[in-house]
Image (cartoon, rainbow, N blue to C red; front, side, top):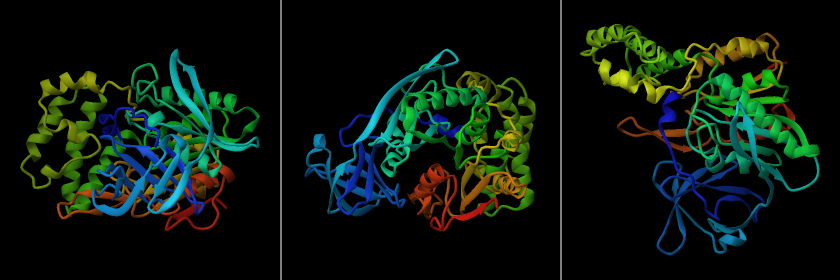
Length: 426
């Protein structure tokens, strides 16, 4: 998940952004996207990208494919919160919103609490960042989708991103302290309306949230497309999965992992050692047919560069990443109920070993629940594959958002959630 930190998007403000209740009672969320576009998402997992048409309407394309889906959307009175969504009228849902600034390790962080209107207690989810550098205050759509379903959300910009201060970091322990500080601020702002309180962490947040839960009591943790293995293991497993999917033999994959291991050692050393071994591995295998397809989570970023270039890259990747952190002692020590939602086709966070480890915790009687969407990739999206082998995401799995809502609300799942395979403690 280091690779996702390389992307950056600017913050956008638009009166169209919000979650709308349509006349049929269903909801649709409108969120900012790159290049002045918008993205709609529905609770059933369907989604599309909106681009402005010449007639003032917005035209939708299917998922992330760029292919028109025939839906027309307009905002006739944007400031009044009106929407026409594919023939259905709707109105933007009003929430109780409280801005927040809070401190962690002498760094000022900026967030907000979004609560459903009312006076009664509601569950509250603190949304924990992944590795992205984007502003969660701008782009994390769960901050609206969950409150529209009766679950309050606290969202904040990770240190070094968006409106928060400090330097960007991947130090899991430091980020866990930030999450604890966010949780305490969320409780303070929610006051007597705070019911069950817990964390939802996606991707790298799956390492951070369980640490935070062990440091200050919460009622639940929800990990989405996260890992129960180390950062080094993540790269190794991605190399294996990608090359296996391309039809390479186990013997070839072992050679590729040898190159990856050498690259990982350079990265983990802070670009201070391991260069000779990395050069030797690249020279040994550069003519192998699989070499062009060697990628991994971050091996690809090192492969083309000389030793001198790699040394120059060191400050760019000085994020405090704990490459050898083993999450299992943290997970074994925890008593907080946890829901892990994994995708079976996830390259960035391969789920096979992580799923096995979570099942072992369940078998030991620990309060974990595992949900596996066999066909989902990173970000928990389904996808189609082009003739060139490129994945194009189409939607989220049915039941995915409802699963997050229900576990936050009740601490357990009820019934089926699309085609998710669910394993839970008895």
